[in-house]
Amino acid sequence: MNMNRLVAALPVLVCALPLGATGPAAPVPFGPVPSERQLRWHDMEFYGFLHFTVNTFTDREWGNGDESEKVFNPTAFDADQIASVAGKAGMKGLILTCKHHDGFCLWPSRYTEHSVKNSPWKDGKGDVVKEISDAYRKHGLRFGVYLSPWDRNHKDYARPEYLTYYRSQLRELLTNYGEVFTVWFDGANGGSGYYGGARETRRIDNRTYYDWPNTWKIVRDLMPMAVMFSDAGPDTRWVGNEAGKAGDPCWATLDLRKPGRFPGGTSEGNFNGERPGTAWVPAECDVSIRPGWFYHPAEDGKVKTPAELLDIYYASVGRGACLNLNLPPDRRGRIHENDIKSLVEFRRILDQTFARNLAAGAAPAASSTRGGSAKQFSPANLLDNDRATCWAADDGITSAEVVIEMTRPATFNVVDVREHLPLGQRVEAFALDQWKDGTWHEFAKATSIGNRRLLRIGSVTTNRVRLRVTQATACPVLSEFGLYQEPVVQGAIGNGGKR
Ligand code: FUL
Figure (tube, protein in one colour):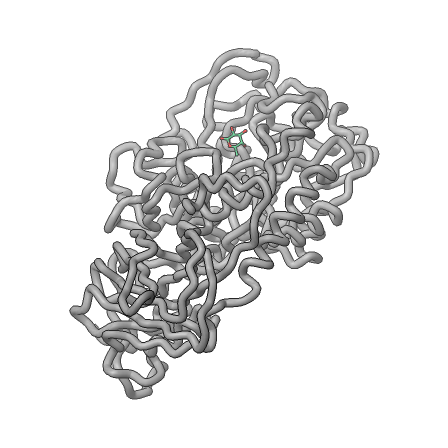
């Protein structure tokens, strides 16, 4: 295979040789590799959900579909406040429930009367999707679309006509509201509902009803850089729980040949992923900051604490997944003060933790450096805070080590490692040692790395750390390594990141 051609075809493959340059060739990718849209998504790591609809006002989690449009009436809707809160929490995007299972549309869709246009909010002239997507962009956040396939309001749900309606709405959302980073296809489907007054139970066959390949094609055509989420991909997968926690290990790949793999189908295997798999379908961990997805006044005192949010972060982002944290706007149409308080403290702790890589400036030495490269594949690339550069071992090497010698002892309790994703997920196990009393002592070990592995460990003080890749399916290619000190977290239970 012509490596240069391969390299040119791969996105963000900066650690490979530029065309025409001389030097050691880049390693051949192992197994399925991420697409450019997936790489952009991986880079986000942390974004949010906004669950907002008639349920916010009726105090329900699933509307039946017979709610009057008149109930939707936020008293002080403030898209700017919502986007600003999310931005300050460190989110890189927000996904809005443009339409939840109840069928009420937060935008004045041409295809239904069941929308904001018949609500008293802004005398029916408002458009939540427009205000929200504009505010996100103003605050540097990317916009995501949730459009529930299940619609308990629509008279034609479960009939072929509904599919035309659903697709028309998808087109509306992907045409009129600018760039979209994800389309979130919910697996919850079929059951009792209003259905235009029929008030009956309707079931559909998830495998065939939505004709997923052609529905997905609409997204690909209109929004080629958007990742599509569902229980089975095609781009990102549900992790299999709504607790925000990924498995350990959590591989970025799935075996799509498995029977039952379609949106709303099996989620077996989603927690840990499947190795080596047939496709790159990384996990998204979704969870609400409150017990419910929608706002309920009775849950004002049940907002997750900063310590709980940190556990979730380490068990999602820290296992190579992305975290989708739901913030439910209240009846004013704002993020509640209690949620803000928790988010602000959560962010403060994360910022403090990752403010300084204690290994930066150290001199790393590797047991194998690809082609003896002094620069391109040097272990020094692990400490340059640049994900596009990497350390790579020679072909055929599946266990290798990097010794990081610091100028003075450092005290740390978090280790951060990243693989160079464009070349696939290669490392299957690794360990960390500290130099103490004239010998090496292992202080941590783990399996999958992928986009990012964060290990919360008991406090270690040393001036020499050894990273050992103990098992890999192809020569290891890592992009970043860091040692950090997390401050004492009040009320920490440490159930997410193992300490
Ligand atoms: C589920 C839905 O049924 C919930 O209401 C919520 O939207 C959650 C994110 O996905 O499948």
